[in-house]
Amino acid sequence: MQAALRIRQARPRADHQEILRRSVRQLGAFAGELLALASLAAGLAAGLLALTGLLV
Image (cartoon, rainbow, N blue to C red; front, side):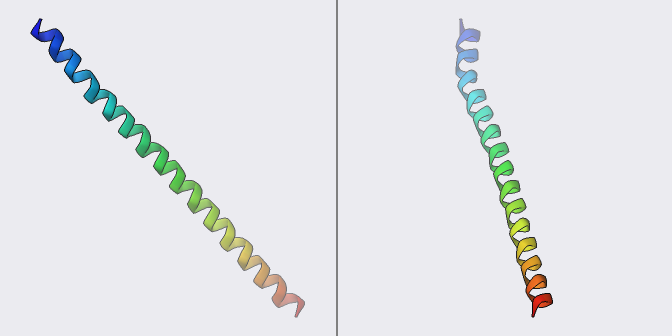
């Protein structure tokens, strides 16, 4: 009986840990996407500066 209660009490903690792991993974993926977007914007800005430098 006590073992069953311990298993039931341990289960929510495992669920919270899984939710935390999933959230951290999603946050890491989001940070990676932001970094890729920032590097793309920097590349576009550098390309535009080079293009305007060639045109002037």
